[in-house]
Image (cartoon, rainbow, N blue to C red):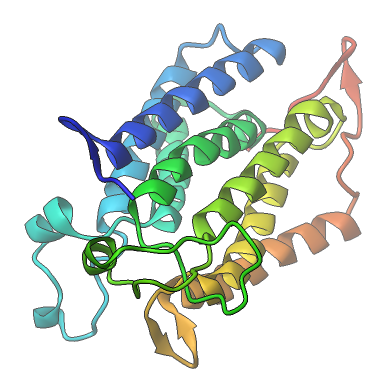
Length: 265
């Protein structure tokens, strides 16, 4: 495991590459849907990036009810753990703020869904190369990660035993989701916003279970902090999917001028 290639921070490099890939996918999909000419989308994407960056950095700040036990906001921003779940929440909030400020009323989830999946594939490579892998895997057949003493000391994982490549599982999950959306689902006449809700619900369920081999700190009821967050939010997403399935399904009700009508927010 490496942290730097010369002067380049590997994790930061792949995060930047992931953002670039996501932006490219977003542009391609916006053009395909005939929505690339609206400059307001640039402000919405910028708001998503700002919100995602803030919540990714600060999403793990409030870890203790006793505020004196938490890092200061400055310390958290500079040295604290980053949270992809926090980043997704921040980006979602940023999109809504951006739409409110610009007056953009069309749903944008189906533009963001494949873009986020593609960006996650690339960004998580940086995590795989630099961060704590996962829990021990006794009898691992192949593909596990074994750390040297120095790598184990840096990541806080045990040395010399096979560990779950938990980030590789996540890369594979997002790659499959991107493939399904890009090659098939985005061409279907689903209601606007459907792909994003499905993708987030699927990721929430997947992430809840992969946490059991991630090696994060267990804090309450045998669950990690991400699991405690997901045990609240995933049922809300699943309830929304169930409500939509019961009230009209997921197909667009009509087409306008040969193109699917956009459902307004």
